[in-house]
Length: 278
Length: 277
Image (cartoon, chains in turn cyan, red):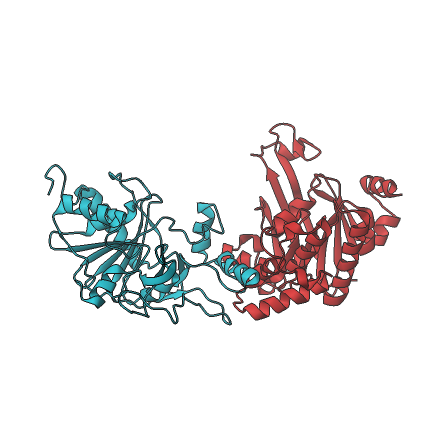
């Protein structure tokens, strides 16, 4: 551990402030809590919201897992793991069950998480209404008054134009029948994992300076019309080329040598576990 | 004629001023602008009533306060003072300008419909015509796509727009069609009061005639009350049962439309009527 820095890089005052914001976020599921986002040795937009949450929550006994688009080995994940490792010396893992804190970008692990685990999600744009309203002042009022007609209109317009809802990630959810929430750019395949989950979900947006949360056993429902139900991505008839799983979120890939398309589990550690590689 | 009826809308002393105001404001007005502090009194103690099923015309020159009245009624701007009561909202027991945001939205979505002079203010130009109509229905709480689509079709047919174009964005429509989409949007939730703010201004004569015909049909078909703002006396003559004449933020004359047009009392109304002839 690099002794030139405080444990987990941030000073204790900053960590306390972020933890207080987390507590407020947990108390009001789906509500975006503003916080004083700190400078980090990483550019805004590279997961600084998630990193600040991880750094303020992590203790010496924690076990950290970091994934980026489902992969433990991608650049973002490897660098965040290195950074946290340098300033904490905590143990890292690729196994979902072993981790106490999992920081993720754009995926929720396939293995259901339990009550002793926290999933920290990196969020670029926390405001679910931003696509329909540019003004922060107005979106705040809309949340306060539960005025969500414009986001429903966006879904309706998609049905008029394409006969289906074409939002594939960041699909808006209603939390506890109160706040519409942006679940971060996870595929809508992952949305249902948040509903009545055992673990705590924390969402951090460093650039936008917002934290929000889904505490365990929270009602999280993807927006859907009475007569047009929510549909997640379907991988019917497709299987992971490596582990044979047919019930996970699959990445479509292209073999340039053979010219063939194939599918592979997006969650690489799950795939490795099924194959007995880890 | 209306003595026994309860008005659907009652406005008392609506005042809207732009500027800080000063103690000598109302004594030092030149037109509707204070010569001391420069405050503009866009609406100055306006009072009027609209009865069920009638068309009340509001006529006056540019800057007389017509649109200010409409914007205040549709909560697009906050009045400086005054009260308004809607019979269809809690039996007219509460001043609608003192309501909270959610209550105001309920009125906008369920009781009133607004058609702006400029369609850009009333429509989402990038969204389809069907979505523009559905927006109102969604805001009123419906989450049923089939019902909303059917309602959009029905309303577009009522305003004589081919339903095959309901998936197209109003930005691709002509000015007259945009106004008709606005009208169908305003009617989406069967409002009891329709606010029409200079709906035919800027349209060519044949399109104007179509829109006016349409408003006449709507009145006959839905029995809806209409507050119609125009600076065009021909439009007022054609549609309005009663007329209010505004000048510099004040009402200078009101009465049955025929009476106003045949026997104007106020000098300004006389000038208006003579300019028509």
